[in-house]
Image (tube, rainbow, N blue to C red):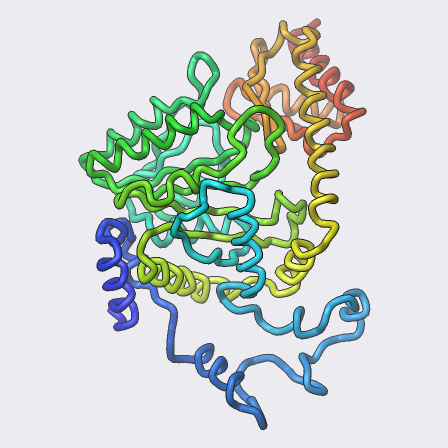
Length: 432
């Protein structure tokens, strides 16, 4: 094993032996090179004042070489904030500003020990880093039965994890914390589990309330107290889009510092929060009591980044940082929030009107981009195909009965026509 990896492993062990036991083989072997092109280039940038012939970019007239055809459309930004490679961990100022935003929006983080967010190529990349560092073949990854399908690819296919699902909802249509607890405690023989918490949930648009949030935290704590090492990933892709009475914070804050056998990891980003899907700017953040441990986890994360994408896109990081620092940011974001809330409320009013109750129910939703119908009389895939072929309407079929509707992309004034046509599609298939 490389000596740098061994040094990082010793830092992890001394900080928290349980976290070391959570690492995969790759997680133990990975490191960020201290000697090599990046480190030598960094040294040259600091000290080579005459000529710096190290890093692989082109310089012209004292700045990054660039094409006018590109720069003319980006003239509000300095070339040095667009064209050079971004650091593997991301722009330092962006990381600091995002951390400040996290603390402001999550009061439960006050006084907690957690690292500086590391920039990822959006949230999928952050989840992939978690999988690489902490998931070994045969490890158990736990998440609800209603979930984002990419979890299966990221954890199941790529890392050969054993996926354990539990029903998202109880019979009373609240979060099934008892199911989570049972799935966790069943791993006592393995001594390790990875849990993914995705709120607002994709595909249902559900975020638990405060009582349910407390039950989730208690279930994870119970597993830790039974000797199970738990890596808890809060997938906060749709964070902030809370339209009703639900948790308004990530559970990352409640989990931070809760138990030595619990490693909370927050995966979030500007992708959905700031409506910049194509920018691919996300973050991964670790919570731990020991600063040397946090530093070692950051170095291992940078090793994964260096070995895969090398670093994230610089322009999009600059654009997001500029927006976060803008005096108009909060006002503009609130305007978009109100539009999204209006669409969610309109959908709920339509579904509660009694017009469609004979052909579907709907799963609870109070946040995010989506909601999910539970069809009573026809198969979801048959309806999906019929809607797109006969009415030009696109939906997502999930299993036999569930149809996901992204109200985020439908104007409020068009929502009634959308659901009327979906209802008509059901009647078509019933032969009415």
